[in-house]
Image (cartoon, rainbow, N blue to C red):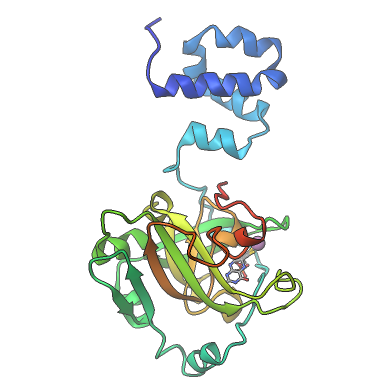
Length: 270
Ligand SMILES: Nc1nc2c(c(=O)[nH]1)N[C@H]1C(S)=C(S)[C@@H](COP(=O)(O)O)O[C@H]1N2
Ligand SMILES: [Mo]
């Protein structure tokens, strides 16, 4: 057996100690043999023993692993619309009225070339289509087909400044005191943020189509984020502006997102 070394080993040891309560004697036995910990079957066992927790998934697979993609037959006949289902601001109503012809996606902040892109321009760029499962913290899931522009592509063409660390998504909807949307806790524009690892993940797209049709208003028209390794609330709908930032504490109440400001985790990895 070769001498174990490198960061991978530390990860496995960490996982072993984390899982040992569940693995019991087997955990102790296996921890003596690093070759066993390399074996796919062992990884499976470990994953199950930990109840497939998000933490172990992340450590075993890494941040760049792809979310599962499904077949067309798996698409949910009903996809619940959640949170805002139509922003009630005058600005949004006017944009919707003329089919988003005047809507522009602003890209600014820590970029070399700020941009304002129309829907037609976004549709003319290379696209990605993916059938994925959306998981909401409220306990429901749905499978949908999404088509859009890879966010990484837009960020590359905008050119990131060296101190860029986050992509912040500013949305059109103000959850102004509406119960059921957390608004009773305090008003505020919906916003979200992700780090650059998620921003450049190949399945992170700005979707303009859902199930082969233009994105419905209830699901975030004209453009919404799909960040497939993250929970539902990170998938910002009704996108207006992407701000590249070094910090998050100047936004909202400083926690990086509308729901994060109300107690949810910023990193909602799945
Ligand atoms: N702008 C905006 N984005 C949002 C929300 C919202 O209320 N406003 N709700 C979030 C939550 S909690 C979920 S589960 C998903 C729901 O997306 P859907 O309506 O397409 O199901 O959108 C997320 N993005
Ligand atoms: Mo959600």
